[in-house]
Length: 395
Image (cartoon, rainbow, N blue to C red; front, side):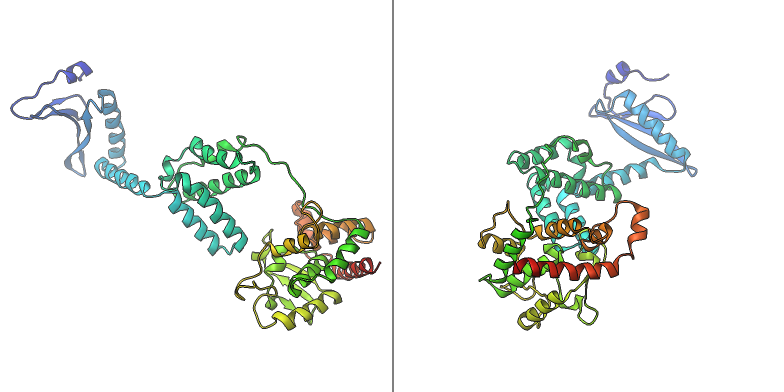
C-alpha cells in the first residue's frame, strides 16, 4: 500500500533498521537512530542496485516520488541514476570554482590570442577590475542581475554613464563566454540593457573652419615641444587616420617606393586591413622622423622605452599646450576637419572620402562593391588634401 506523509512522519525507530515500501521500488529506510532515508531499488544490466534519494523530512514524500520518476527515466535510457548523481555533484563542485574573476581572465586571454589591439585589451582589463572588486570571487552561476546593477550604479552615480554602459557590455561578454563554455546558462546583463542612464553623445571637438585650421597648422609648424610630437600632429592632419593608428605605427608597415602605409587589421577599429596613400608632404615628414627614430620599431616610441609607443595623451596634451581646449580641438578632430572640407569641396566621391577614413559601409552589397574601389581617387584626394593644408597654412 502506498505511503502517506502522515505515515512516514509517524514511523518510529526500532532495535534494527527496517524498510517501509511505497511503490515501484521506492522505500524509506528507518535507521536505529530514527533518521529516515529515501531509497530506490532498481535493476540495471541484470544487477539489483540502490539509489539514495535523500533524508526525510528534507526530502518530502512528493519530492521522493518525483526523484524516483526521474531516476526511472534514466534507467529506461540505460543510465545509472547513481552515476548521474555523482556526475552532477562533481559538476556543482567544478562550477563552484568557476568564479567571475577566473572566467574573466580566460576571456581576456582569448582576446589576446585573437589579436585584439592593446587599447581593447587594456579597456577589457580595466572593466574587469571594476567588476572583480564586487563579485570577482563569486561563482559565475551565483551572480545575479541585481548584483551586477549595484556595481554599475557605483559607476553611474559619478556621472560616468558611458563607462557604465561599456562595463555592462564587458561583463556580458564574460557571461556569454561562460555560456559557450558550458559553465553558465544565461547572461544576466541582458535584463539590464534599459536600466542605465543613456549617455549623451558628444562629438569630438574639431576645427572645420578653413581659416582657423590654417592658423592651427601654422602653430603646429612652430611647436616648441618634442620634434616627434610636432611631426605626429602634422601627420595626423595630413593622413586623417585615428590617433591610435598613428601612435602605434611601425616602420615595417611603410612602403616608401609604392608610397603607401599598410595598417594591419589588428590595429584598426573595424578590424580590416587599411591602405593609406602617402603624399609628398607625408613622405618628407617621415624622412625627417626616420632620422630621429629610424633605428627603432615604432615611428613614435615612448620617451621612457623604445619598445612601446608614445602615450595616448601626448598629442592632445600638445594641443592644450598650444592653447586649444578640449572643446575646440582634439587629436581625433583632424579626421572631421578632413571629412568636412573634402565633402564641402564637391570634388570627391563621398565613398572615396569614407574609404580614406576607413569607415565601413553598413550596406552589405555596397560594401562588397566598394572594397576594391576608389584607390586611384584616394591617391589624388590625399595629394589634394596635403596641398590644401599647405595653402591654408600659408594664408
